[in-house]
Image 1 (spheres, rainbow, N blue to C red):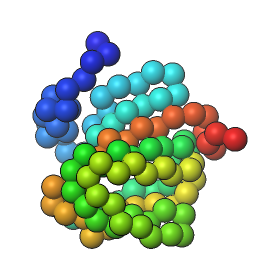
Image 2 (cartoon, one colour):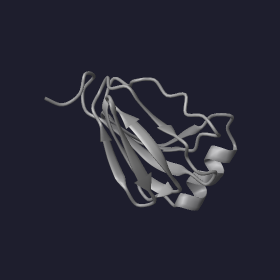
Image 3 (spheres, rainbow, N blue to C red):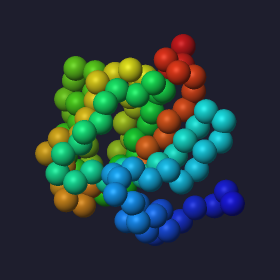
Image 4 (cartoon, rainbow, N blue to C red):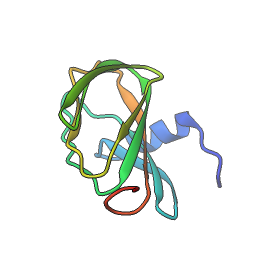
Length: 106
């Protein structure tokens, strides 16, 4: 199936003990939903990634720089960059799209 509904994805996330739930994978691309509770424990990833903020607001640290984010924003993180969400609202939730080769696109 190549058609995904947000409500079904949220249910899948609720069925796991993880803040991440993968919903689709094709080649190097993986699409997940991410909903951390209080603290974002992420570490740098080996692929480039894109966040699309579904709900909430807060601050984001990306490779040495801070920015504010809100619902509807898109954030790019290059492979290997230190990054994390901070001071986010309780309703915070985001799509995460990993893609490309390990080490990132050139």
